[in-house]
Every structure is written in structure tokens, then in C-alpha cells.
Length: 184
Image 1 (cartoon, rainbow, N blue to C red):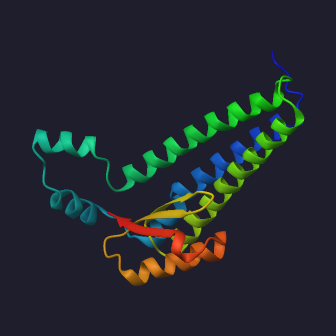
Image 2: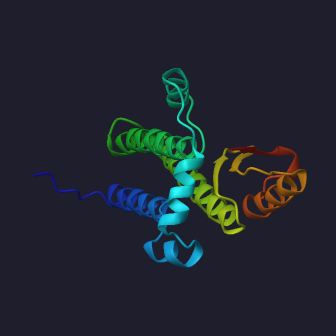
């Protein structure tokens, strides 16, 4: 059994767990909200089932190859979290190894802090955008720019301007370096 004694490792592990918890809490609809927001009964479920035509096999294969709607947002978040976890693990191993000098370790710690800051900003932006009534959103915060993908059927330039303003106020990045677009 391995006992973790390094304080930084424990802190990063707790941060990753907290981020996973926040991600799950924002992406899953609570059970209480199902009854209050939408009256689900057998008639509406039957109408919804009847309204969706069955696609031929070729179209179903195309749909599986190109994720849309919820699938795109979920898959992107999972891939982003997986890549970040690998990067954090690599940086932690560099910090824990005794080979590098103190300057390199300090640079690695700054990189780790920047990743944590980006994760926090992305989660905050996604939560704020969804709080404004959009079905889903993915934010990609980079050192010099921010890109936001919003799931919306009737997305206007006014919506993009509101979201871009929210991004600039939250991250401090100039409006010229913010990109916002919609995906259905």
C-alpha cells in the first residue's frame, strides 16, 4: 500500500476530485427539477416518441460518427478532463522527482497553477452561461484567448455579444480575443 506524504500531491488530488464533483453537479439534472420544470406524463412522452422518425442504418452510422447535441458537449468535457489529468500527473511527477533544479520545479508549479486557474475559469463560465438559460456550454480558456461553444437553436449576434461580455468580465481577456459560436 502506498502512503502519500507529499502535500502538493494531496492538494492536486483534492482539486481534481473537486473539479470532477463540480463537473458532475453541473452536467446532471437534479431529480427534483424534473417534476417542477416540465410536466412529464405518458401523453407528452408518447407524442415525443411519435415525432422522431426512425433513420435508416446509414444515417444512424453518420449520427454516431458525428456527435451532436449533448454528445458533443459531454465527449468534449470528458476528453478535456482526461488530457488535463494526464498533464497534471506529468507535472506532479516532475515536481516529485529530485532531478530538476529549483527553477524548473518553480516553473512546473506555475504551469500547474495556470492549469488549475484555467479549469476554474472554464467551470465558472460554463455555469454562468447555463444559468443565463442556455442548454449547454463549453468554454476553452487559454492564456491569450477564450472560445465558447453554446448549444442553442436560435442563437443571435446579441446572444454572442452578451456571452462575450460575460467572458471578458470573468476572465479579464479583451473582447477581441473572445470567440463565441453556437452548435445545435
